[in-house]
Image (tube, rainbow, N blue to C red; front, side):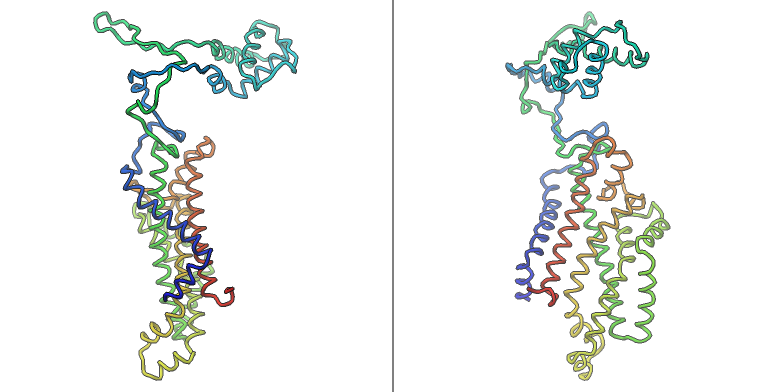
Length: 417
């Protein structure tokens, strides 16, 4: 056993896959201990907040600790407010109706473009061929640009309880800064929030644990069923073998995912919890394990050590457990690893079509993908709502398949160096 374990951990592929998978497991275990937060708590009052740190505006204004900096904030404000679409519109008008040569217009220089626009733009100028709707669009753009370069202070006012009028209590200009550490109330979303305003990072780690649980339970069920039927069919042969092989072939001909869809739909949404989905995946994923174990047992049942046990009067159960099972154990472990990966992918596929776990208490990787798709995260540019999920699914599958390949190199004589 020790020699076998040493051989396994000498495989570079197995070690790489094992380290990745272990890192994912440790993250799932340690993160909730450090960050005690409900993964489904709706913190953000809105959809798809960008990744970053959010400060309380009220605390920022009332902190009292401000710092003066000799930094020109106008340029960055202009760059953020003036989109490339608006710059192209300005350049088009200046060239066609403002009498400005195209070589004098630089859309990358926001301040210079605005200065040129304020000098040349006239809503009453003759604009031949320009429809009324486009004219109004230029006027709206001019209103947006008006005063964009001016450094106008922000006035903070409070209502006087006696007179009922607003009175200025503070004036904030662009050169006043505040240290974010002075702000008490702040929220950091490393991966932003999803369509429900939930912290994606916390939700993702919880969902990864739920999906691994589904994959593990489904893998155990599928492997146990496949192992039992494969041992029975391979050792007994005859009618029992033909009967098991008939049902195995029947389940093999019908795509397992189609079966899974039909069974999941028939179960009903109210009954589809995490464990139910894992059970459904497990009972539809056993055929290929059965066929493989059966073929292994057929090659073992007439070997000398098995015949010797038969002649010694050992029971069938003892022969199977002591003389056959140890020889197929390595294959069963590899099959189990692949079943876990297949279970996670199957849950993701089911959830994407709305047949995954129906739960409001926890999330899975598949459900996160479904929510992101349903609320058009890909169209809104909210990559953080779906890309990390895809990455985690890929990492889990990659690590498990690497581990399986490493084990295959150790136990398969044809692949040994």
